[in-house]
Image (cartoon, rainbow, N blue to C red; front, top):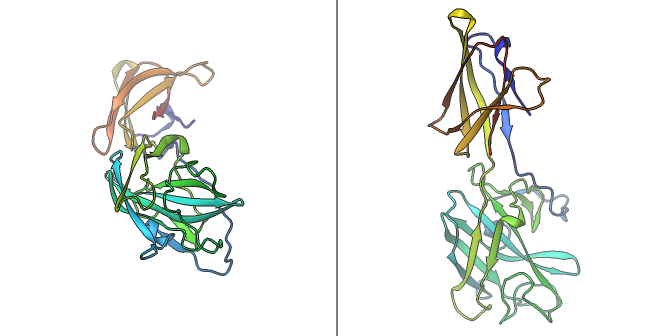
Length: 266
């Protein structure tokens, strides 16, 4: 855990401390076309072209409001191979693009949903394939969710933990146009914080006042804890603070010869 030590920092100095968590994904699939050029992926259609006349549009009946783009890719999993067949893009709770391709070639060269199937995981009993999803959220707001070659995603750094979302209630394929489904999620952008500035002023009587500014991204609150010695068993709480604008100013007045501080986000 990062911390800073107030009697070692000169007045007016600037320090950066990266804190918080990050969702880290791994490569999902190998690259089939080793010589192919990676393509920037910002929409479901970058990976799954819509088959005109052989697909049905879908709209979400309910979803969480997310300010950045979220994309879910639906796969037919057959013989351990994942074949992208459709999915949807969400932004602010609205489906901006969503469709699933029909299985127009049952010989195995084409993949999609058969009439009467739904796109829910595990809802295709009796078929030789199953359905799976990968969901990605544009945490950093750059409108890019990764890169890919064909259906193979090999930059999954913004993949969402499967325990953080639910996709249910798809209407059977071909039953209506557009089809409907329910998408809910509790995902939050990773909480990160950075110590933006530290200023220390000596007061009379040997009392020190430490003032520092904390810049917190994607977190509503943060805590500051301290130790007067690193050999102390526990960190003491200086307080919990609400994010106020770009930076939040925290002040600690004390008469101890030294103190170590730590900024913690939820």
